[in-house]
Image (cartoon, rainbow, N blue to C red):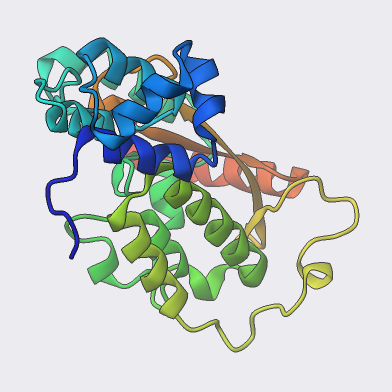
Amino acid sequence: MLNKNPSAGSLLRQWRQRRRLSQLALAIDAEISQRHLSFLESGRARPSREMVVRLTECLSVPLRERNVILAAAGFAPIYRERPLGGPEMGAARAAIDRILHGHAPHPALAVDGNWTLLSANTPAKMLMAGVAPHLIEGEINVLRLSLHPEGLAKRILNFREWRAHIFARLAHEIEVSASPRLEALFNELKSYPVPPDALSSRMNAVGDDEIVVPLTLASEEGPLSFISTTTVFGTAVDLTLSEVAIETFFPANTETAEAMARLAAAVAQDDER
């Protein structure tokens, strides 16, 4: 029978095993004895609040799960969760907006830990045009939007390559976070059919001179090819902020850069009218 209320020690052991560390390796990193760590994991000793914080830091446990372990040890959570729109998050929200808008005329968007869209600049919204309305109503998941048959899937020219990239990244995030929601999303995405005309091999999708897996989309301006980068708040101690990621897309070639500049100019003209 599953224990619905696991102890702090058992949770620490689970995270140690998830990180593929021996008791000795973790004990050395945390500067405690292996015997003491063994007692903590078995429940023969009760961890102090400081010890929970030290061990979870050594194990790179996500902040949300650190609160769970603290509660299991009998301590109040120390990592708060504030809404991104709240007054205390003004500086962080301004930083996100500055990155998104400053990245124009190229696409950029901000997502939470479940890949739910938080904000997007105008170029990113333009690339979402033409997808099924139900994918961009309410809570928008950008990975679902990307791979869903009624989303961007039919416009991604290197679909198999991009799909494999998303699956590898999501699998890594599940390994790091142990998130049930991400695991459910992964299973959902794997159930989506591959477009019948999707390219069937890496050599057809990515040339020998490529250095990364690009996102290549069909558009009225011709193929648009982007390379992506991810930005996170490296010192966040708020749950919401620790899970925010900013995805920025840069032109992978001159043709894409010129096409995005033309699209931006057209949008600016429309706004002036």
